[in-house]
Amino acid sequence: MLNALTIDVEEYFHPTEVQSTISQSDWDGLPSRVEAQVERILATTENLKVKATFFVLGWVAERHPCVVRAIHAAGHEIGCHSYWHRLVYDLSPEEFRRDTQRAVAAIQDACGATPRVYRAPSYSITSRSLWALEILVEEGFTHDSSIFPVSHDRYGIPGFERHARSVETKSGPLLEVPVATVQVGKTGVVPVGGGGYLRLLPYRYTAAGIRRVNRDERQPACIYFHPWELDPDQPRLPLKPISRLRTYTGLHGMSKKLDCLLRDFRFGTLSEVYPVAAGERKTFEHAVSVGNY
Ligand SMILES: [Zn+2]
Image (tube, rainbow, N blue to C red; front, side, top):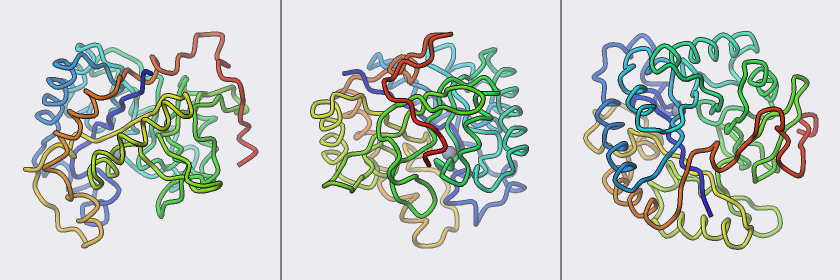
């Protein structure tokens, strides 16, 4: 079973978790780490012959176009992770559209490719911001991977479809690809999708979760992580204790866990795992109407 490997390309000072400490006006003055971090990821994926989808932040594409060019030249898929890393449900639809257009333009300028797959900062397409899906279709996106079907303090739509589905919007369909979760009991859904869950919990937790999705449900799993999660030497920002725990725990063990993950399972890009042929977008059996949520 081919699973989707996705990487949100941002600096260590971009996650929502650190934004109460660091403001946008500080960003340009902080040392950059993203070039070296992405180089390491590209070396690992090349070594293990894995292709992935890199959701690039427009801000990073504008300041480090060589990073985006290197990812593209290595044959990976380029996706969009917004321009400013702002939560979608904090934006107006018009602000969201402008942010998306600016990110797409920065990515195009950097590597010549037009991203067609999108991931919102902190999975911030929730029941409050489902209007964003329609805008993504209008802006030419075919896939979105921004809805986490779990309960969390900052994101998630509990009860949303756990596997990839075509979502109907007023402007047309969009293939929604949720990050991997497992069903616990009748109603419980827990994340196994990588990122903090891979970093904070033992490797066997993620591995068992992916096996369950692949073998028991016969479905691919969509996994994600961030370049900064593989960098134990990144500068430590003055975070509150809970944010410090969520951000800095497990950095040392992450590259070994990632190595195991890439060796134990087969991975490809989002579009490879979930193909949507032009003009024939409704590949998946059950369409979900946005109105249901
Ligand atoms: Zn992000």
